[in-house]
Each structure stands twice: as structure tokens, then as C-alpha cells.
Amino acid sequence: MTSLCFNAFNESAYFGGVPDLARQIDAAARVGFDAIGLDVFSLSAFRQGGGRIEALAERMAKAGIRCPEIAALMIGEDAAATEAQLAEFEPAVAALRPDWILVNSDHAPGPATAGEFRRAADRLGRHGARLAVEFLAISRVHSIADALELIDLAGVADAGVLVDTWHFFLGPDDWDSLAKLPLERIAYVQFDDHPAIAADDLREETIDRRVFPGEGLFDLERFSRTLRARGFDGLVSVEVLSKAWRGGDIESFVERAWRTSAPYWR
Image (cartoon, rainbow, N blue to C red; front, side, top):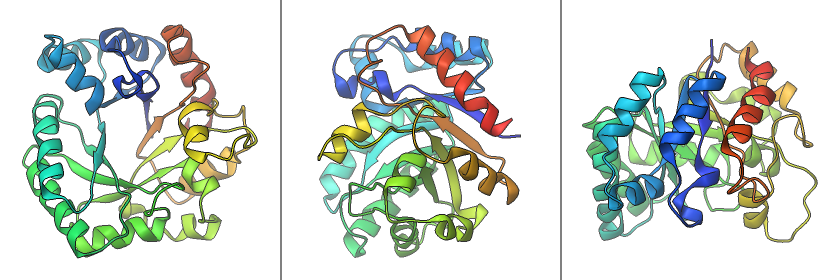
């Protein structure tokens, strides 16, 4: 059976402030999520405020959930930039033991980027974490093929492709691309929906205007059916990025994320 994860990025410190991670952990566990996805921006802010990541791990264990994903490692060609990020990631990865580190890149796959990817995989792999390449409709790694190319160039056999429904439906891939992506190369899925595009800036659309599954235009029934029919039973992370909900009632947000997502995967 798939593992449903509440993705907490909508309240990330990336958008400002310091989110209440403990409250989100408790809310996710209460409604039935198996896991919670966190991000390095919030974890760094938590640590800078005097918090102990080990205490978050203890809270998760007590609540009966875990952290299988941490976002977001930006891979480029600059070794110093990679090193600075790894210094932020390693304490969190060592304490929380995620399965996956979400990777983004705005560089076309090439030898330098592949080298930095391989270095990050080696460092974080010491703690049991693997790299999940998220292709983005708004970046140079913007398709399933691009994500696979980066992984293959780096020669990191245990890395995988992260399929986010937003970027699948609004990027260049089609149903045939999804059907041909080997199951063993899928890291996990991020699940969300979207209304009609209203702005020229797709970045604004993706971080501010997503909606809960079933409340937008994506054919999520076909998406989940396509993967499940092939035997996919991995991690599904519900990532609704919505400015309208940001800073609001987190318990209501988490409950709605569970209620609208679970029917597609149960």
C-alpha cells in the first residue's frame, strides 16, 4: 500500500518566518498521514532558533510517523555552493534519516552538474539518503528524460526521478512518458492539483496557486490509476502550495490534504 505523506513546504521558512514544525507533525499524524515531508530552509531556521532536530525526530517517533523526504538541494556547477548546502543538510539527514533528498537543478545536464550530483549523493548516502531529481516545468531539467539524463551522467544507480503532478501536467511529458518510466526509477510522487493558469509567470503559479487534489483540472484519477496499475506502491507526498492557505489554520489545511488525496491511493 502506498505511504501518504503530508508535505509541509507551504509553510516553509523559504517564504519567511519560522513555521511551527511540531504543530504540523502532530496535525499530520492525527488525521492519518504516515509521514511528513520537511525542508532544509525550515529545519535551518528551527536550529537557528535554538531547536534540536533530534527533538523533532523524537516527536515523530512518538506520533508514529516519519520524515521520508527533505527538500531542496539545488545542484549546479559550483562546488562551493554544493558544499555550503551539504553543510546544512547533513545534520538534518543524520537526525531524521529520510529516504530521499529532493534535488532541483536549473542547469542542463552536463559533466560539471553530474559531478556535483555524484558528490552530494556520496555525502548524503553515508546517512542512508538517496537523491530524487524533481523535473520542473520551469527549469532546464524540465522532463522525465532530463531527470534520467542527469542521474545517468552522474552514474548514481540508486537515485530516482521525483514525479510531481504539477510539473507532469504542465510540462512536456505525456501519458506515454509516464507509462515508460521504469517503476524502479521512480523515487516517489508529489501530488497536487491546479486550476486554469491565470498568470504569465509559471513560477508564481506553482508556488502560490495550487489547489487540493480533485479541485483543479488535472486528471489525477488517470494519473494514479496509471501508476497503480503498473504496481506502484511507494511514497506519495501531498504538496499543495497555496498563498491563500499560507499562514492559515494548519489543522484544517492538513485535514483537507488528507481527505482529498487518500481516495486516489487507497
